[in-house]
Image (cartoon, rainbow, N blue to C red; front, side, top):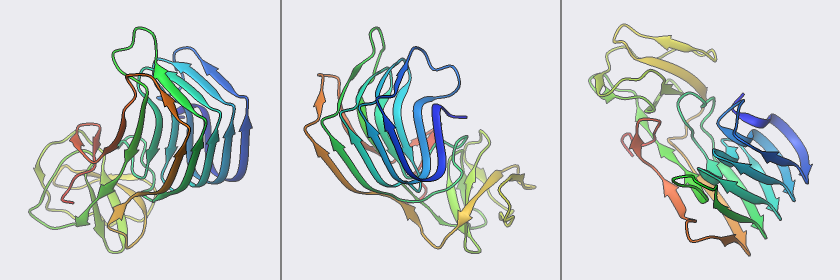
Amino acid sequence: SAGEVEINYATGVTLKNVEVTGVNTNGMFSFNVHCVTNITFDGCSVSSKKDGFHVSAGCLSVLLQNCQAVVGDDAFMFAAQDYPSLTSEAYDVQNVTMINCSSARYPGAASGGNIAFYTGSWSNWTAGFTYSIGNLCANGGNIYKVQNLITNVVGSVAPTHVTFSDVTGGDGITWRFLNTSTNMQANVRNVKIINFKGDTNCVLSSYANNAQFDNSIYPG
């Protein structure tokens, strides 16, 4: 589990007046939802040194209203593609509405309070390309993501497995099968933010980076 409250592959979910407090012990996030359609967070709150509301790939029609996050990391994260250890699909996040929500930095934390968007793009697997942890590729109508902690390893063995598993090729690259798709990117689309209040630490940001834990740039 990646979250204190974890919801995956569901339709028509409402969470009302749910509070998560203290240091996260079961995962990285307070609320973590993945591939959920029509979900409402109403009057929910987070007070934690880690992440608050994490809405990841495949979520459609998400409403957050009257929610508060006091955190030491991202307060509201919308991730069309995600950290290598968590990613099980790469799909768009669509139709998100935030009304009367707020965020602030957790006391004593070095950072926190962000609203963040994680997107990504990829190319077809090609022999001779160099790959690092978090890179994605397409091959044979499927999407794969590098799982092991490597940097700039030359690929010579294409991923071809079609089961939800990690497979290491003879070139030492471990690929995770994500999903069948012809898409070459994953985006966050149609977001409305109404009456949001953040303290001076709040940052609205969009990520497409090559950091160790979320390498979403290759080559797009």
